[in-house]
Amino acid sequence: MFGKAATCGSLWDFAVADTVAESQRWILTAMRQHGQELVTMLWRILGNEQDVCDVYQDTFLQLAHHEGGRKPRYVKAYVFRTANNIAISIVRRRIVERKGLAGPVAGRKETNSPATELDAKYLQEVLRGCIARLPEHLRDVVMLRDLGELSYAQISRMLGISTGTARVYRCKAIRLLSAWMNKEE
Image (cartoon, rainbow, N blue to C red):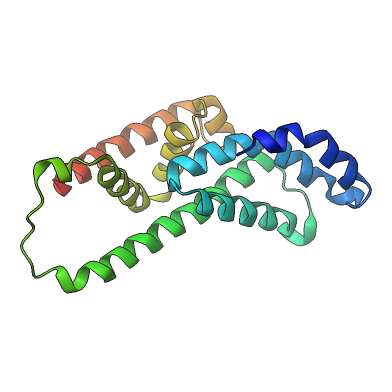
């Protein structure tokens, strides 16, 4: 997805440099610096290219309009937190839609075979739903560590917590997710 963007980067910089106000160029820099990591995290959360693109766009639009166009103190933290929140909203919306569609067939007995229940897509959706249910402080750490592949040191800086606290939050989140996933079976 970003392969084309990387090869056209210098051309894009040349063409856009004159059209973007000096006060807003930091947004382009943020896109360049954090875009690929952000897309990787979003892809793992959402698993859908269109949703990833929508969240990416919404994230940087919110960044551009943050406090009247002012640059946040911690741009990377703002970008990842905003994207995380938007992505979780999409996951929650999917769950509600799925429950609404499943309502009329809820009276039927399930005849799914074990092979069907172990389908990777099904497990991913269940896990995404469970992650969306986590308390925000636990969810943020899991999303950044496991889906965003950030180190505990990076997470602690982004969330303003200690490295040890980030590790404890992840451990608690994994235990909750494990319990919830086992109940789903």
